Image 1 (cartoon, one colour):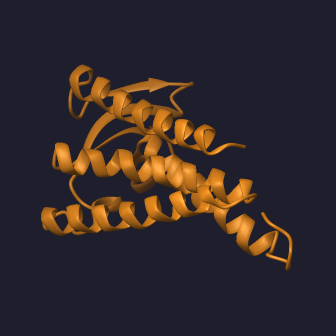
Image 2: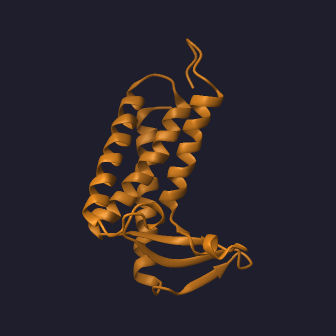
Length: 161
């Protein structure tokens, strides 16, 4: 696949999540839930001022700096990998990681918090209270794909994953 395909996909995914967050921010009251899919999925607006699971939310400038550094690192890795031949699985993984990182970092820099909007019903009250966004799923999926590419498929000499 060409560099433009991965770049376009990364931009489209990041912009899609930013767009959804903007709609959620302006169209859904804070602390109100909308149940969908037989009450298994909950749409709600949550502001996360910290790292995942609200870690160090009392230090917003540190969170912003950490997010910028991590996004810069992933973005550079994405660009270097795109410039290499082959490696389609790593390119896909980094496309997802970069899109998710950009979207959440955009929120942190523009709004001072990340907008999360997807929750899942669970027997555990703690798990039911956790709220995600599309960027979180992109980061998680990209991480699993990268792990799969590097650990399970392995990197045999002469074989690119």
